[in-house]
Length: 261
Image (cartoon, rainbow, N blue to C red; front, top):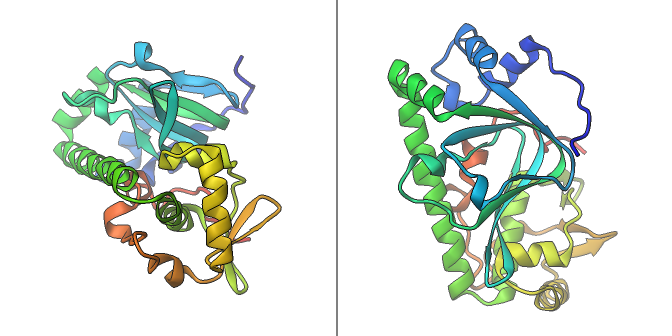
């Protein structure tokens, strides 16, 4: 059952959506029309937003909260992406390429802005720049997913974990004196779904990285004091312009988790 959320004022919704790069060619009045013509979905922690049998031609923007996009294969879960406020997702439904067996599950109470396929197509006809941005998003997301799969098939678990930690630093890291903290408490099992490994393998990889001085674990939080050492680890090469989640790049101005400590 969904949790209650305070209703967002229309001006607040317009301001939030105006910061999403997908809508950068729209005026605030045009965004206001979108807000009035489309709807929100409010969900509580642990709820499933969509499953394979529920997917349709819709576009989603996460206004508030956090969600995990994942797929299942052979009875195991593989996390495709963890998305924060400002993320555009669901755009794969507008292409012949579909993420089969994919799910979206709420990690914390969330508000999702939903645009029906007809509304998206009408907007693209009226504002071709939106279509161009959507194509860019599709290209980046496909490349990102392909890179994730290459990591899983070609790298050993410690290198996969190091690459993931570098990505998490870029997407949500908080700079504190002398080190960077990843503020989310990820379980080893959850991290395993993000790199295609079981919990035991992740635990061993963490131990190895800690022994090498690459990172520290304190109260279930990950701390890194030498990002360059992590980046230079064999097999953990990582360039943010190639592997950064597309949603982060298109929504960099949206208020999310990149906050001061």
